[in-house]
Length: 141
Ligand code: IDP
Ligand code: MG
Image (cartoon, rainbow, N blue to C red; front, side, top):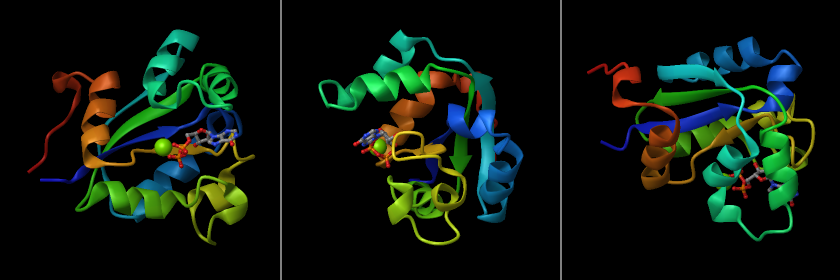
């Protein structure tokens, strides 16, 4: 079943006290939270998580930002979860994000855009596994 995705409430949103508002968006959009925790990534962890972007011009900015403060990491469940979550968060650049999306309402900038969402089912499984053990994932039917 392709019903899981991985989300991060990024350091800008946690710092701006949007965690509760973004949890409301998650639940209102019909996602179930399978696991959630607060983490403060090291630079090395951020570089590992975003290794697909190694060598891109924004890599240093991105990994420094993602390790600059605590964030919330979440495993989410919903039918067609990857696409549903990306629709809920909106475009990468908040100035392109449509009304009612999380990035439109809570992002600070292109780099500091409030939330992460997996881009495929395969990456969602890898990203969930990057942060959570099987025992931490509360399975529902
Ligand atoms: P996504 O988060 O919407 O999947 P990606 O292209 O995978 O977007 O980029 C990962 C993250 O890297 C973005 O969410 C954003 O925080 C950051 N980022 C992407 N492009 C730029 C850029 O041109 N400048 C600065 N940061 C960027
Ligand atoms: Mg991406």
